[in-house]
Length: 389
Image (cartoon, rainbow, N blue to C red; front, side, top):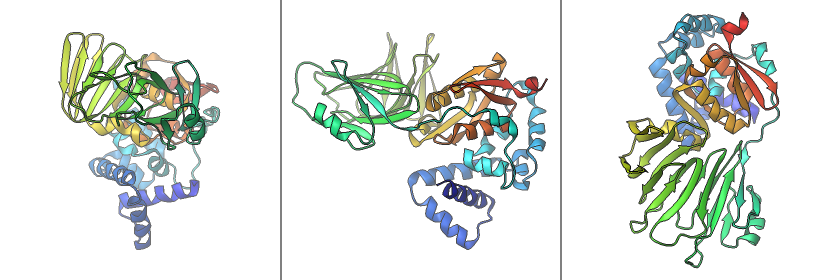
C-alpha cells in the first residue's frame, strides 16, 4: 500500500508539471477515474497549482531546490506574526504531494521531527451506542450480530447504523451514538435522515419519531442529510441554539469547548434559532453562533465538509483551532510554549488518514513552528526562531 501511494503521488506531481509519459498518463487517468473523490481531489490540486505556481515557493518546488532557501523567504515576512499565506497554504497541496515535492527520493527528513513519535494511532469506523438503560454497545464494521440481538430493528452495514421502521408509540425512546477521538461513524434515522458524525461527537436521537417534530441533540460535529417531511420539521438542538429544517443538507460544528459554533448550509434552507433571534440560511452561507449572537457570511462549503471526505481543510485558520481538529482525530493534545504562536494562520488541505508525524513535518517545514513530544499523548508547539535562541 505504501508503494502504491508513493506511485500515485509521483503521478499526481508529474501531471501537475505536465511531465507524464503516455504510459504514466494511462495509469494516472485510471486512478483519477476510480472514484469521484479522486477526481475532486485532483481538480482542487490543479486549481491551486495553476493559481499559485508563479509564487516563489512553487518555483522552488519545481526546481527541487533546498527547502532552506524557501524557508528563508518565508521567515523574511515573519514580522506580521503570520504564515505567508500563499507560500504556506495554497502551494502545499495535499500532504503526500507536498511531501514528495519537499523531499525528493533519497533526501532525508529533517532530524528534528524524530522527537515526534507518539503512540500508535487507530483511525477507524468505530462508535459506542448507549441504550436507554445505560448499556453500551461497541460499534464497529463487524458487530452486526451483537446489535441485531439487542436491537432487532437496527442493522449495521459496516459504514452506518440503520434504524428501520418500528411500531409507533406515544413515548420517545432515546439512543445516543458517541464517537471517540480517532473514530467516525454514520447513522440513518428511522425517518430516513442520514447523519455522519465526526470524532469526539455524540448524537442523542429517538429510535422512532412521534408527534409533530423530529428532534435530535448534538454535541460535536455532524453532517446531516435530512429526509423531507413538510409536516414534521427536523430540529437539531445544540448547546444554546437550534437548527430547524424541513429537508436539506447541512453541517454543524458545535463542540462544547469551542468559542464559536458553525452551521454551514449545503443545499435547501434552514433556520438557525437562538432565543428570539431567527436567521434564515441559503446554500453557501454559514452561521456563526457566539455568546454575542449570530452572524452570517458566504463561505466555500467544501472547506467545511471536507472531513466527510477524510480531509482536513482550513482557510486562514488560527493554528490553535487547526490543532484542535488534528487532536480530535489523532487523540493527542497540543501545548503551546508561546501563546503568540496560537494566532499563526494556516491554509491548505491534507488527507485525514495520514500519519501524524508526516502531517507535522509539513507544518514544520511550511512555517516557523516546531513540534516535540512531551509524552505519548502530548505534543508541545514552539516558535522555531525563538526556540533556536
